[in-house]
Length: 190
Image 1: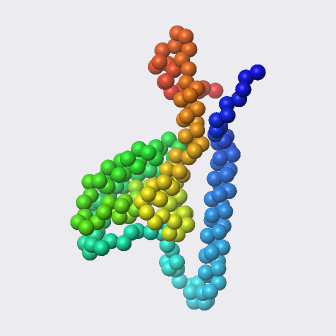
Image 2: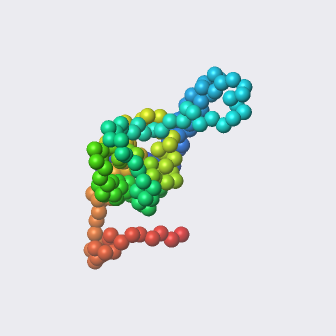
Image 3: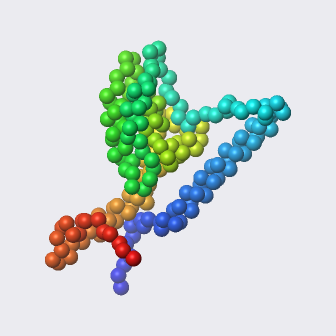
């Protein structure tokens, strides 16, 4: 009788997707309840005009002592050229590597890089990833380290790590099979 591996097994994609949906729904419900509680304190005329107050970012930007800190439109465009969308084939590690390389080209007198990174990071996201950042709790990310770890844990989950580890440990080359044939991407036909 063969023993089962005692390593972690990734959840089936359907279960993981359902768990993410429920988590997102719970977060949206909690936010909606907070908004409803806030709205209950408004008077009738407040409902006639759109309100922008009460909208807060999930990122707390570090204070800057220098008076000349400005993120120019050219700098923002530079970062926006390589946006991460949060799709399964997107690599969060590659995105962070490219983002940090771009940030390392920026030098503002009297400003440390960990002050610039959280300000620029939202411009490096699009689609699902941008939605993820906007839907996080207000003031969740107080440092670059916390923000980058949350980003990696969201888009390079333990399940993905476990799958890659399992792929590596279960690698096998059959007799007469070339290394190219073993490592070439498999195409499935129905």
